[in-house]
Amino acid sequence: MIVQKIRGARQRIRAKVGRCEGHKPYGTGSGEAEVIERMEELRQQETAVDRIAETLNTEGIKPRSGQQWYATSGFPSAEVCKRSVRDKGNDALVGNKSGVMGVR
Image (cartoon, rainbow, N blue to C red):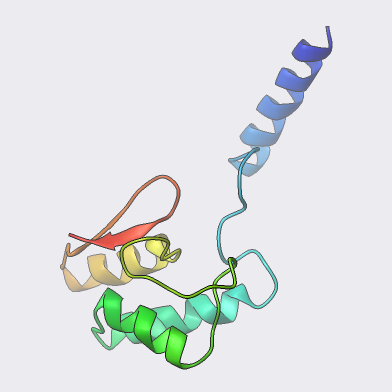
């Protein structure tokens, strides 16, 4: 009975929002929208992903983990950067379901 209620609630949330469980996408937290704008700015300047990570680290911008940015493990702006790359006709960036981006 309870399992069915929870399953139904999750299905309704997924239908309404598109997701229900797991980490919220990067950009939904406080101050993250500005970081994504900065990433997009750098991509529009055709900056490589590893240079974007290096720039963010140099500027003192921290990811959610509070550690540092890496180009191949945990670069969260996949959708934003893939959109920028698609606009330029370049497929050098790849993203997966979790939003992690790396260099092909």
